[in-house]
Length: 336
Image (cartoon, rainbow, N blue to C red):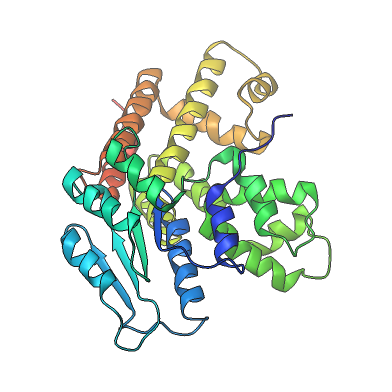
């Protein structure tokens, strides 16, 4: 069996929570904003020994508001109260080549301070970014994938006694959302700290999870109930679920609906469809209901709409909430 790839963001977080000294320059980048914020917070905690940060020694800037040279000058300016200053510079993926070169030049001769660069996405093919990564402690923070959820739960639940089945149950219940996983682990540590955690304990205690919210969303789409779908979407967003991940859930739902529809068109039995598609037997009734409410052309269009939404969310020309709301309006509109 192939080993799961090392999650360098978790590795970096463990280093920051350990005894290793702080680096002069960090680059935290990737799609997982939750993990990036945890890394920034870990630097803050280590620098100020767990106490509240000193505003004279902790400064935050954004690339679209503050030019690079001002940030570099700030890092090089000694704090009035002594101690190493920490400067966070967000959205650096918006910088041009000349500005990135200024950061590279600074990183080659840094001050006795700590500069944290934050980016959502970088182009590693560009020489400037390659140099920034080499000159800093760079940490990639990609979104947690479905196949790595169980591994992440095991690594994050070091002090909890999970049965293998309970790990899978929690993974299926919450999905690839680190914030919800850690919230669930915190709750389970309170209710089952001294006993093995079973699937039943997970089911009884992990509430308001992705599974329940997604079920409500997909059920609303199946019934073409626009108000209920919008309400379920808002619950997911309130749970800090990433818009791209929500769209990914809808893509999975679209694939399931289409496969069930095709299976029914071929007069396959329910059990054969369940085995072929790989759906939970308890969900078969919902998917059959969807098959009766959507035509094949509508389900193919469903696929296309979700794909277009994914592209819009990643290119960010429109606010994510608006993209997903429009998608739900399209999916739930009355059939022709």
